Length: 282
Image 1 (cartoon, rainbow, N blue to C red):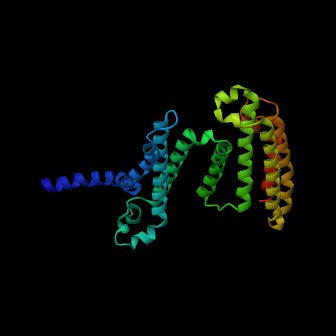
Image 2: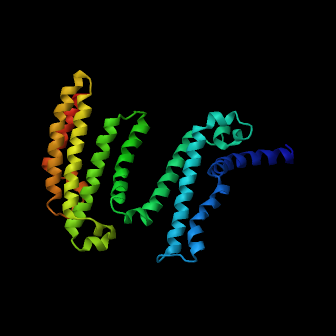
Image 3: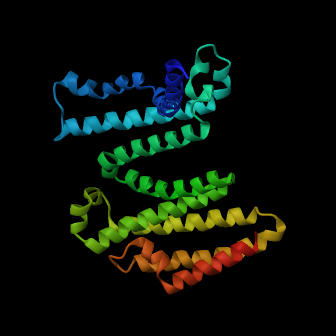
């Protein structure tokens, strides 16, 4: 075996090891990242960083926009892979060329999007009333959508409405129990709480629960005849569970909302009754 042959055999595994990370970097398009420095345009023009810790906030904004753009690049390359293969230049993109599997690109895109949202939430969104509640609710809904994507089950419109309202109701309840359970300390713990009032949160919780039941009934009424009666009946224990949830959150307890859903006897009874009727209609 010649020296040249041995060198080629050693280089081949190394190139295989490097192919995937290089494909990831190329798909992320780092040459496009400098445009996110436009975040500093206004501070530079005004010759000021504005608020306290303005530089830190600006850097977080750059990171958030960078993660968001990277997520778009990954998902876009997956969506356009077939067209890119017929393009004289774009066919060399890693996803189109097969150097980066589509499934890997989707996962990396999702992680980049999550990272961008995490930056925004930690430094910006969690200080904006209502928006931060919607963001918390989106965390519950994303888990539902993740399950649907993993199993290749396409969720119906009513299903998404019911899940969205349920997640929103839980997020509102979390803020209500924090505000009533911690009292004045709630604002020190979470500054955005100064914008909320217990009465408004309580009313919102009941309104969202009523809308959730209405959406659930609309979904059940649209089911096929063999399932319709079971699913309509399942709305009763669901409504009782929401009523029980309202009672528990009104007790001004410091217990996490998740414990109210999983450690209360009557609540578990309602949940199991709903599950039994729901399953019977499947």
